[in-house]
Length: 451
Ligand SMILES: [Zn+2]
Image (cartoon, rainbow, N blue to C red; front, side, top):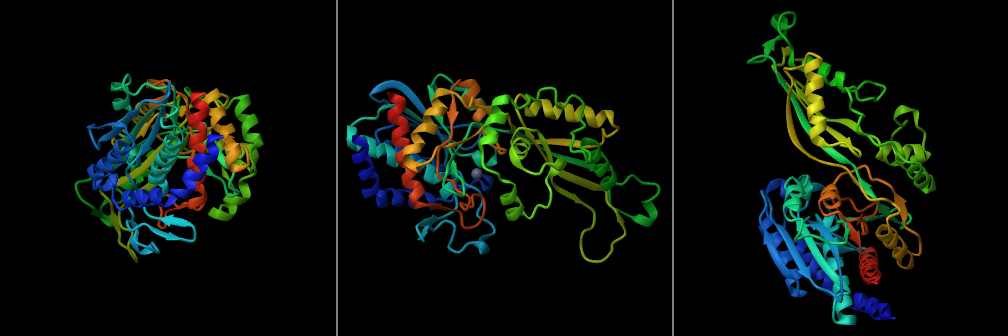
C-alpha cells in the first residue's frame, strides 16, 4: 500500500519539515501587538507556492488572509483552515528558552505559536509532500484559508468568508486545531461555543472624591457597577437577562449518549485547578461535561475601580469598569446578547452603565454523526491505535460558524495539541511523535475523502 511509502517519507524528511516549522516560529506574528503579520502571511504563502499552490495574499479590514488552491485527482475540495498569528509571549522570564528561538528538548519543540497553530500548518504540508512523493498529485482539490487574527477573535474573518463564499467553496473542512488527551487518545470536537465580549463601564463623577465628603451624597461608580453586575447573574448561576435562554438549543439525547461514553474528568480538574466543588452541585460524569460545553456562561474576567494599593485610602471612585465574556451555545448570537444586555440594564435602572462591545463569534456545531466527521474519527484509529473520542462541543470559541453557515461544509478537528502543550502560556511546545502522527492522519483523511 502507498501508505508504507508515505509513512517512510514522513519519517525520513521529518528534519526538513521541522526546519520549515522553526523558520515560521522565528517570526513573531503577534496579532494582539500588530507585529510580524505581513511577514507571517508571506512566509506561509511561500510555503504553499513551493508546493505548486496558486496563492493570494488577500487584504481584509485587518491582517491579510492567505488563500492557496491546488487541484487534485478527484474533483472534490477539502478546505483547510489555519492561522499564522500567535499569542503574545509574555511573561518572558517564565520561558526556559526564548519564545521566538525554536528549541528541541526531550522530543519536543518549544516556541511561541508552535502548537497554536504553526505546527498544524507545517505538519499538514508535510503530509501533502508525502502524498505528492508517492502519487505525483494530490488526491483531491485543496484550499488553504490561513488567517492572521484568530488570537484576537477572528474579527474580520466571518464577513470575509461571506464575501468570498464562491471562491472558498468546498465539500468539507479540517479545522485549525485538534488534540489528544492525557492518555494520547485523539479527540474529535464537533462544535465550538460562541462568545460575546464586552466591557461595562460607568463614570459617576468628574473626579475621585474624599469618602467622608461624598459617601452619603454622591453616587459611587464601584457600587453602581457591582449592583449592575449582580443584576446579570445570581448565586444560582442563572443569567437573569430576560429571554436570555430563548435561543438555547438544549442538549440532545445523542449529546447525552456521547458524553456518557467519555472518561471521567472531575478528578483531573480537581487536581489540576484546585477546585473543591463544581457549580450547581454537579460532582462529575456526563453532567459536568454538558455543563462545561453546552450551557451558556457569563464570566467576569476582570474588575477595576478605586484604590487597591497597600493600607487604606478613603476615596470614592469616579470610575469603574469590568470585562465580561458570555460563552454562547447554538442558536445564540453575540448581537442578540448585546441587545438583550442593554435592554436589561436599562430596565433595571442602569442606563448609566456603558457597554463597549469588544468582539464576538457565533457558536457552531457539526452533527457528530456526519459522514465526514465520522471518517476523520475512523481514519484516526490506525494511527493512534485508539478510536477518537467524540465531544459534541468544546467550551472554547472560534470562527467555525462562518464555515458552517456561509460555506455549508462539515467541520472536523484533527491535530497535535496535548494536555502539556501550554498554548497561550510560557514553554508552549509540541511532541514530535504527535507531529508525525498528525501528518500520517492527514494523508489518510485526504485519501479516504477522495475515495
Ligand atoms: Zn490560540
